[in-house]
Length: 386
Image (cartoon, rainbow, N blue to C red; front, side, top):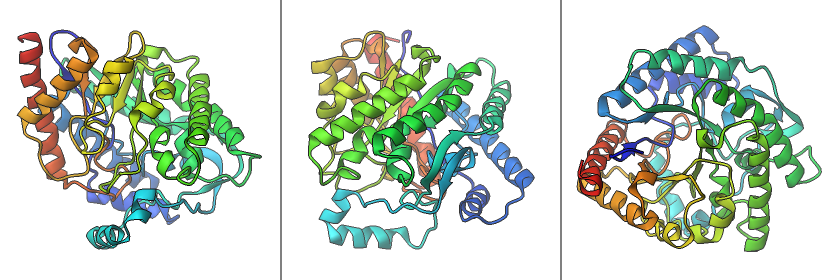
């Protein structure tokens, strides 16, 4: 990674309200003028890319402006989905009913694209025309031309087959494993389009951690780990034509502010997570529940040739982390890994996982990213003498 710690983020960035409203209308099945939608998405992507460059972020994207959420957007690109799923609530919500009341009050009636009532699989799942993902990649490449020499790389995200299969429930396939493999086969198309465009592919796989306290909350750990093995195998099958070093895997326990005291420890899942054919692993290490788990990297190590992208900014709180704290977090992970050149500093998750779902005020989100850049510079001075 050279002689300094580079910076990135985990995908979604604050959307302008006009674009959020268009996403909400599309998700409700209301007619939306496609030209208006594309113009709004293009303008938003141009703005958020420019802001990333201005802040000094190194590995950038379009903020997922053209997507309603990090995974339900596949309803617009893949066949086989209809109706509405009934996703079980996260176990830490159920455990604290008074917290749920507080959480609902805090939402204040804000409307967002639902991740808990996504469409379900009611027919054979397959990827349709690639126009949308090709357009997305082409737009990012075109916008990057406005900033020559101002960034190190750029990425496009795509969901894990596991999160699609877990959250977009199955009413067609014989079993969950068959469904996961079918989704993986379909998503291979999108993975390969991103790679062919020369962009980094980020696979968002919260399922490899989150589903322990969601879909598998009442089942033994062994059943959850069996699910993760199926998902990892499906991901690796879908990545056969994608160079390992052009893949980054994002794993988290859910991008929401809650107790999280039923989260599966990173140690329990690392053996499976680290099997993914990825060159970088984005891990949520800034939040209060998982900040200590950099020690897993010290005990277990990274796959050969891979780097870690630790979350050093919490995306669920409106505290703006002090740059010195950011630097401390980076340095802790560097000590655990044993080689600061195998680090790239990032955020725990995105800042608007689904259109309208905002835990952090947009202006605060950008301030947090500014602290990320400042903290990485401080850590670079200490780790490299840069």
